Length: 349
Image (cartoon, rainbow, N blue to C red; front, side, top):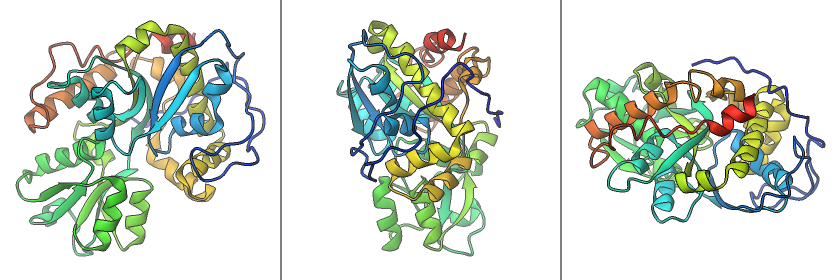
């Protein structure tokens, strides 16, 4: 999975690394950034886009307002989600068009009873040790030592999927208590000694480590067990079908966000810092926990250009069904048909 970062090549450099007037509040931005290609004012799509506080290219795109610069006449609204479970609910209520979402939640959304017709349109990152199981007791050195303990995790998230994978491998599903906590509630529960451990992502992960926690497993370990996890972007099939020009430009912009992470990490870290409310040096430390596949890599056989991503989503669905996390699997072919690579293929040429 350790893919080498490749240059986008066809995209022009951004003008102005850091704009004045920005603050740490996600919705406060001042300044202008050039679109990496010629802007297209003919695109007038209304798009409801959900984001999560995950250090990947989607945050860079949001912070630099690249979508707004490239499609100045489009009506783009950003909505914050705290976890994949929130995204599932929003898709279920038809209040979203496109969203950052983990591979496990998007499979759950496509499964009964929700059975949403969703397409995966981008891989924001492959999750490594940026999602990990942090424990409080210094004497606990492995998952086998966790018997009888309480673990907090956001249900329906990729972290939840990784935790279930690890517990299932050790035959410990019934030996621990797993409770549903949002990321902002995990730290408080930790401080009140209500949980013994948590499988969580940044920046909460670093906060737990600073509060005398230590890691014993990561999502990279779960990937080694055959259950890789991704932060993806999904869109409704209706939105993708009705807005091909928007999706093409959106893909160009996402590719630029990923390029900046891989090739200009200092600039990207500044954007991540603004959106996450941390210092740039801290934001930069978060990046090695993820792999950011380039546009060319995503167009290749391991992902959208082959059946690699479809197989991963199908495997996720099979696992969630075995664990009772979904009512039943989706119909044959639903998961494998979720990757939508048309725009990626077009832009990568």
